[in-house]
Length: 352
Image (cartoon, rainbow, N blue to C red; front, side):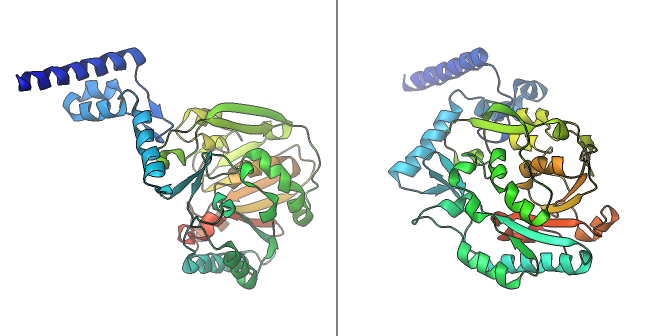
């Protein structure tokens, strides 16, 4: 009798789950988990190989179950972080700790090396974007930012552009590591004092996508609300010619990426080793070369109106000794623009 009851309950649960799956339909993407999900098409191609994964991925209320587990750990067991991500009020903040002196010194050596070997005839600057952990209060593990900036000031042989005090926590996405694009308007005049590109108040069209989940969401296992992602355009940006080394011409704003797992890739199509952006309507011959990480993807579009050409180099995806095959540094303005996340993990940069 007991076995019959268990069998009946099991069959009943499968039946209810099946009805729920039929009613709600398959989800193809999980913005919450940052990945593609197994759909019924894969089950049809390999029933026994994919059925378990399909049932797991499409299980009703999957997000709520995962979230309940995360909330239990955070509030019942007082665990502050999960997968090195803090949840502070509505903000997901990725831990950048401990201070890795070897990585920081490696970063310093790398940009000094590039400066002395490739940029002798260039106007060179560097700037650091603080990651969100900079704004954490006492009681959370975070990078020793005072030590970091003192080390940079002591050993980097390049002029520094300080933008640390320009930002507050609200300038960042709640669910992602990056700054909102409109936050960079706050530092345009700061960069202009050094790069002298002639910053002025231009008119922009504000575009809004209302269902943005940042990359930090998939690490915390906690249900969070989506947020807006805004991007700003005008005729200079809309008419700019963008060419990627890997995949040719694209738009400044790749709107197809809004429906991908990482919607932040809207900005300049996401990771790319080398990008050239030409603005034929600039009215000048100014050129800017930026060594950068992903933070610059949303910043650089705002610089397009002021330059005839901008070249973006991401040394995580191309070796420095290959760059001169594509870029002429002579008599150019050069900016190293990196987040403090990269400074503390500079082995990612392929320099020497």
